[in-house]
Length: 579
Ligand code: FES
Image 1: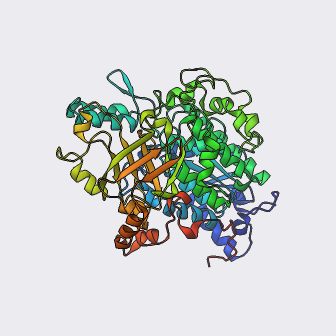
Image 2 (image 1 turned 180 degrees about the horizontal axis):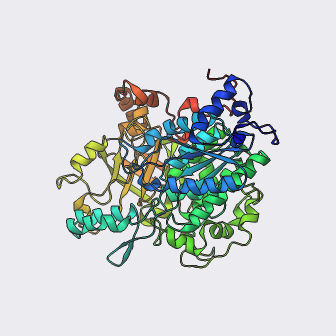
Image 3 (image 1 turned 90 degrees about the vertical axis):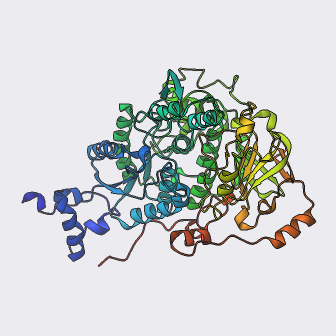
């Protein structure tokens, strides 16, 4: 057939032509097997081959609509003269995966990296949604550095329960406390399940997924408006189609990820995170992404760059509204326009324009949702980095989600050695605890859990809840869900399982928290701590499989919890053939 005859080459040399542009046996093999899907020969004639990296999975409900989204990307790729090829990668469902999706972020990033590098593609579209699917795809893509564009799946519509808006995660934490305090029945609690999550998309609070979608846009890796268009809004499909068109242009312009993910871009993202009241999880993910890109980014950059920035977005868990409201109010461009004096406006973005150009005419339609600078939701809301003998390498707290009265506090430690210990004792009415105590949870860090689970926002004891108390100081080496809130000190480094001082905190020790002074201190003489550490034994490490490798190689939280041998990149070249 005519379509099977080679056509004259009319495109510039491309990476994919190392597979498809050959007349030898290997060229035959690369083309012929692909043609079993019905592609005509001229699809492989040198036009940009676009990989669509898809995290669709029915076990990742937040990404359950991604096959449809991919079809819209393909439309755009074809329209722009490219050839789209969709491929699956490991998908991490935050609510389903045990022991925690974070354990597998680095594994998924390896899958992404090798899938991109090993395949005949010239550019890639990353389909990202649920919490860990965004950093894992960006980390993997960064280590290859092809032309890359991100597309988030969008948040769910606002949850609605008995006439009220209820937010993903945040509403669960609130209602489960109400059940424990005897203020809500089990029947009502169950009924709320299907009311909270009633459409496609990811969590619609400013949790980690929405935070990371906002980071994608603030970094310039996506087209404008990526952060906030709801998943169920057809404008999300339109964005997907435009993304497909744009990646073809990016390949033609040879616009690589490293030209977008610069130090300036990361600094912009840190500022954006403060202004939106974003998740503490962004700290770990952005440090890990920067590590893959070879961009120096440290924990202290978060404090230095974000400390003065006000939280302008009144979204749960810091505030009241939800992602749908955010989009209708103007989305991320409207927030960035408010803090433009903090941003590098000349940072290049995926649409070929600068960030400044993208936000120059960003309107705001609802000042209750996106506050003006003169009326912030919280002043100086960036993530605070704490240090002291309890966290010599740092710990973080999200001031916008904390109780102001607890930001300076001294209290008696009530220690839980593991999450199982916590669950076994927290509801015990005889637990020796009062509202001024500091709850300490150990062995939930990268090595200890393993995987650094989102357990840092420990529920309060029922006897405290019944007093009407809703917040206490809590400290751990774990993370907390971006949908959670409270005066919660997280990411303590070094973690307990790595022999940090956290490992030897004992019941009754006094702990001092001073957020303004950026201090977290265990008030125990150094000589006593040294003695306790001498007697400390590390927990047993997993002896096989991925967990064995992970625990051996995972870095501490302040370094992004990446595997030490994955930091940096290897580029996209693979000179050796497969046969
Ligand atoms: Fe997937 Fe929240 S569970 S985004």
